[in-house]
Amino acid sequence: MSLRISDEVVASVTREPRSEAPSARYGNALPHDHKVLPPPKKTLFEDIKHSMKEIFFSDNPAKEFKNKTTGRKFVLGLESVFPILSWARGYSFKSFRGDFISGLTIASLCIPQDIAYAKLANLDPQYGLYTSFVAPLVYAFMGSSRDIAIGPVAVVSLLLGTSLSDEIKDFHSHDYLRLAFTATFFAGVTQLALGVLRLGFLIDFLSHAAIVGFMAGAAVTIALQQLKGLLGIVNFTKKTDIISVMSSVWGTVHHGAKKRKKLFWVAAIAPMISVILSTLFVYITRADKRGVAIVRHIKKGVNPASASEIFFHGKYLGAGARIGVIAGMIALTEAVAIGRTFAAMKDYPLDGNKEMVAMGTMNIVGSLTSCYVATGSFSRTAVNYMAGCKTAVSNIVMSIVVLLTLLVITPLFKYTPNAVLAAIIIAAVISLVDTEAVILLWKIDKFDFLACIGAFFGVIFRSVEIGLLIAVAISFAKILLQVTRPRTTVLGKLHGTSVYRNIHQYPKASQIPGMLIIRVDSAIYFSNSNYIKERILRWLTDEDIQRTGSEFPRIQYLIIEMSPVTDIDTSGIHAFVELYKSLLKRDVQLLLANPGPVVMEKLHASMVTHLIGEHKIFLSVADAVASYGA
Image (cartoon, rainbow, N blue to C red; front, side, top):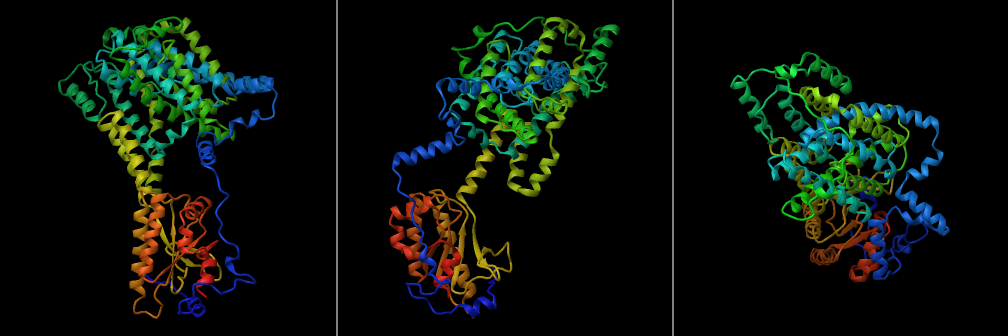
């Protein structure tokens, strides 16, 4: 590191050490006339109350109920649980027209997708339609997003399919179906609990980079799984990793399996048209008798009750709860991300905790009515948005169309070819591979890129669960790395100002003769306090070596800029005491600049301010330099 000390600074700074009591004046007053004071003393109860409020009630949800009558509070309470009651009063025919068109549009998209996604979960096709009937209705009354379209999604369907089949190999058995309902129930309980307990911040531990990689890997895995339907392979692996899938495909080709007539040339951009045309073609030509695999049967009628099917005891209870928690978290992460994206586009608030309560209730009700895990679908939400939806009524319209389909149309899907459903899935998941986001991650943050790639390869080479585990592990590793190894930077003065900035970011910034100014860019905890102390001493040693033998004076003052230090614990206090003692041995005085209220309170309570000297704690770096450097 090279020294950057300007002639202007050298001329204005003497090489002789200053006395303990500063005498330089800053304008007409001593710079330390404005002392850094500890904040007003708080009791332990007040501290805990403040911390709990910031963690769980930072949005102050009770503010709307303040100074209201009991009747009004009751109405506001109902509106908070059922947001539809608040916006329905101003609902107009113009809004309904937009919602009606949007609902019909997403219904035409969701019906073929639901049939296909149910196959991903190894369930009969009608369960996908059941899910798109009940879940959107519940969400429309309880959700706060105006744009999100609810139903089964590819990633969660695949996750359920692989996780459930690991527990019960025969997915045609009744126990497999019961386990799916059990997982859905616990997914809903997980989501509801997160919302009621206001623990939504937990889903933020899954970083954006990890989500990008996880979704891309899941998209590739889902697309590969569709080779079974597209190529008409009978003996296909039940594993999801790329090696097992490609081995199945190669084995089929190698043994010269009879080629099936494939109908996946139909444009998948219009799923319903594809389904109608291909179904009609198969029915007329009876291609199913010539090797084309078809759906064969979709049960007609409305959702049957399934409360008695859920495992509340027995050997599958633990597995159902574990799969449900994982599926619930993934579904919630996807839904909240989609909801926030479209809420930002339309500039309206989205209450994350209300979303969790709505999603949780929706899946609990769904588990009792033969549905599996539902969440927000990105592709359908995008279509819903572009079709001009105004409110969640579009979900109600979609639900009614699905109900009519269940009551009237389902027998017509008997001849729908599986190849078309596979093509629909592939077309739907292509959007999950966000190459632009991956490139941006590489440009911005290499560690985020590593998290993304780790999640991606974990999904395609192992399984969805392993990919998710890698994503979470890398996200936590990044947090730990940032906490345990925070940045410390050397500051210099910008010419003609009293501003001090990073000398690497601003090469013309000049260091002060006889002084070293270091900024700590993190809270100081037990996990990083020793590292910060040692890093500061290394900075000091390196600077001393560079200044030895030069015309510049040795370092006599170490100024620590503490404005980024939001908190400090007992280990951090102990590290400061040790740093102070080490500096005494080197004949270097310690000065502090701009400690925050929490830090100042703890320094004062631990008597560190008395040890260092209260006259050596300043409002700014400029004050400290003016007092001891001139």
